[in-house]
Length: 458
Ligand SMILES: Nc1ncnc2c1ncn2[C@@H]1O[C@H](COP(=O)(O)OP(=O)(O)OP(=O)(O)O)[C@@H](O)[C@H]1O
Ligand SMILES: [Mg+2]
Image 1 (cartoon, rainbow, N blue to C red):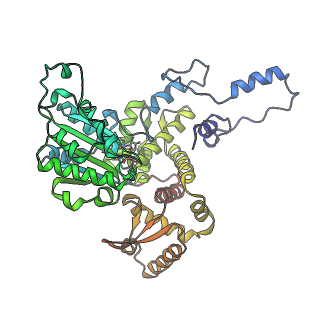
Image 2: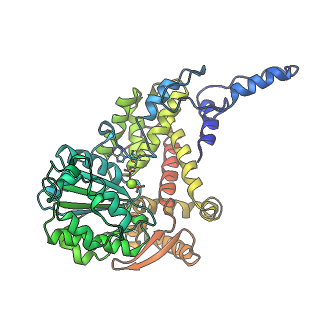
Image 3: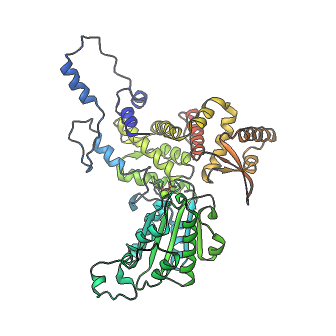
């Protein structure tokens, strides 16, 4: 959803938020139209505008007094960006410790995989800082569809100073002028052989090469090359380790030829964040923003996040802005409800028209409820769910049979779900990535509206 629609929803005098909070001013009595010049001035004042300048200064335009609070708040929850500020980073102590151990003690490469929005890139940022503190050279590359070895390796080599090459003394002229390993590469495309020979010359430091968004690479040759390079480096005890990260449900979905490098790799499936970690996420933002979230509001956010920091951050962001809009510094459950409606609108906008229509028009209430229940599992496992999970969730065999029938009907028509047969057996998955989060949030929204004023249980 674009900024314009957000601003117009928030900025308008008739927003659902303000409507929820305070009675609307009654319509002014009819009066003759003002002269056109005055009307033009009024229109200019009403026109949606940015509240802060590009250098993050609050705009000098007379505003509603909430600009400073909004700006402070915006930095506290950044759902559309990974965390780069340690003060905003919550939990993950165990996972990061395990990664550091495997890098330091076992000198393994790491393959980090997990569902979208689970916090991979944020962890990589924090890990990079820790590694730089320990004087590692860290080079971070965000991969794209057309990534290839030549381009990627040149980018990596340009971050490694020549003074760490065994043949260049720090006092040599080249090293002193700030040259890098990239300057040693000839015009021909870089091969695995050339890359590993060059990296094998590194002395006096250790290098971490991070390849994030690896799932986006479309060239099988590139994935193959990286696997081969990782193997070569391990076999030659080179002082360079890879960390590969991307969206995947399992390891070999992300990296080709895993069997050949299995022993050289620490495979890390990023787990969902626990309730305590998600509470910390909200409380960290609270400290940075100066707003306070009621315990009920935090519990509702933690529950709805279902282990995903992205959703916790998104709901906190919208709920905080809803409170600011109503001139409050206390974020309450009502604000979380508004946040859910906004998040649902965003998620819905990302679904295909076919999925949108089907969910809103063709499915009956029972089918939606069933799919919502399955969405909770699917959200944490790359969209997958099994009939086994269904049997555990629904104890009544008649309900299980009815559910299986609904899923098979959808599957046959290739609507919302599809069957997948792989080494894990026969499972099902939601076809579109955004559907599980949308459905799960939908069920949380209806649960909250039923619970009304009753306290929310975590
Ligand atoms: N440990 C954390 N503490 C606080 N916020 C977090 C944490 N991890 C992730 N987030 C928030 O969750 C959102 C998603 O995080 P991030 O971008 O790191 O996930 P990702 O797994 O890399 O996502 P994608 O699969 O889309 O690349 C971001 O808004 C980030 O601010
Ligand atoms: Mg990421």
